[in-house]
Image: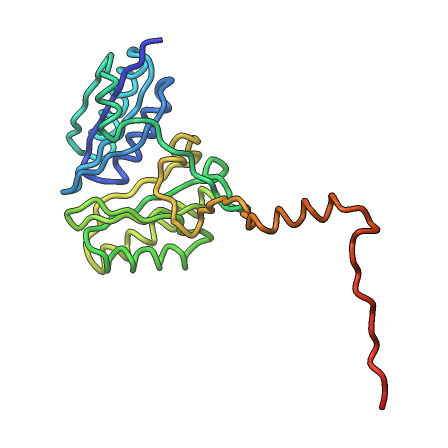
Length: 237
C-alpha cells in the first residue's frame, strides 16, 4: 500500500497537539510524532495512504487556523524516499513502557497550558494542581520562552484546573495557549512528553556466570556426594 507523509507546523505546543489530535481523528493515519526545531516551531508528522494523509493535513491546518488563530505550514509527500525517513527524525517511534498503576490518558482527559516564561508556568501549574483533582504528567519547552504543562484527570477537573491556571498565568506573566482533549487516542498518548518518573525501564536480572555454573554442578551431584558439615553445638565449660 502506498505510504505518504503529512506535516503541519505551528508555533505553540498545545496548538500542535491539538492539530495532531484533529489529524488522527479525521482520517486513518498514524501519528509519528513531533519535531521541534527551536524558536517555538513545532511540526506534527503523520503517515498513511495519500488520500487519508491529505484529509488529515487539511483537518490539521483548519484546527490551527480556526481554533488557535495560527497560520500553519503544511506538506504532503506521496512517496517519500526511504533514505529521507532513515536520516530525518520522521520515522517510527519507540513505544513507552508505563509504570504499573499509571492510567492511560484515553480513559480520562488531558489539558495543556502554555506560557511565555517559566515563573508563570510554575505558578499556573501549582494553581491547577491545587484547584482540582488533576495530576501533572509532563512538561515541554519549544524555545522563544514558551513552556507547557500537561495535566491529566477527569474532564470536568481538567477544565476547571485549566481555567484556574489561565488566571494565575496571566496574573504572574503571559499566557500563550491552552487546549483540552477529553479522550485522546492512543497514538496521541504515546507521543506526549510523559515525565521520566512515570516511565519504567524493564531490565533482565543478570546472574554471575560462576553462580550459574555452581548451580548446575550441584544439581548434577547425587545426594550421597553432597558433603554436609556436621552440626556442632557449643559446650559449657
